Length: 428
Image (cartoon, rainbow, N blue to C red; front, side, top):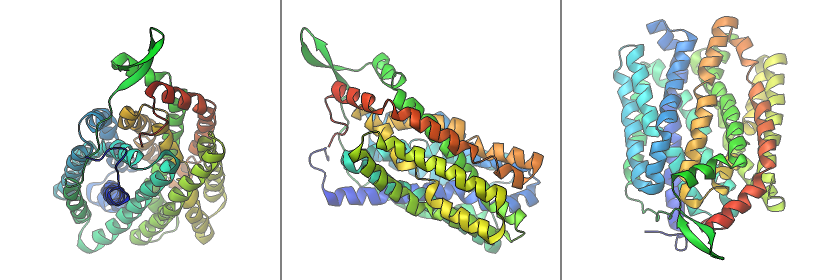
């Protein structure tokens, strides 16, 4: 079983590749439905808000099941937890093919979220163990590039399959490859579970004692960096989820183009985030090396720039010029992600890393992912899709403010966890 001291580059690269592919198929299965909205609305007579619910349902179940799943990841087995969850969400995605009405599809989509609940915490914890702290944001940036790639492929392939083979078949066709990759993950090696101990002064000397539930709770509740970083991530994810969900519909209605072309355009915008995620991780690490708080200054900066670019695009521009600006904004919109996720691993005990990201996931889905599709859908029903999209830039403004506040506490919380755990920000 690999430990912090004997992980080879070959093993790390193999596991990272499988984690990347699983996250990509996670988002293919999650976002394929976006390009199917016109077909579902036509067949079942749904509103935009109901279509948004089919996206939000995934995030609601992730929100509910993320914490118990992450406890299994941290205290049981990383590879088994990740493998089982990947198989479950793939089967749930395939089952969407056989649904006959909105209620059945809603239930099947909810089941996808149950499978995906612990994957992000588990994958993040594994990457934080495989790679040293100075490379953490960079590698998380490469890993999170699978999100826009999977989203773009899901949106694009969904429209193509729907047009040629029927919209229900899109679910099964895109889910099968992910199921096969999930089986492969059962054959990787695991790493040792980190003991939940902390150092305390007793009788004039330091001793390692087990952390109980009250100590674990205080570990998170008193950590202001985590709290404000979570709020920054949540408002940022509101923006990215809103864009992924409604850009194809926006292009379809405003530009009057077929859904296949509109889905392709929406996918291209998100595809540019493949550049933004690794680049954001690299730049955040460089800033972090020069100044510790740079890890949070960077997502604050990219959030404010994103808000400005999206405001200009949705309020003042139309046609090809708008599409070009939105496409270029794809590089910016995920700039926050690698550094912010790295922070969830930096300032917590190494034995609580999956749980740390899980708590972050709960907040970001509660305030961001699960809210955005319905909120923009409701605004679209009330005022039209064109007006609804102009509300999106408010989210990154709030995110930038939260990241700046978090930066004020980062160095203090980092030093505290290093002192309590006896580990310098990383178990490598």
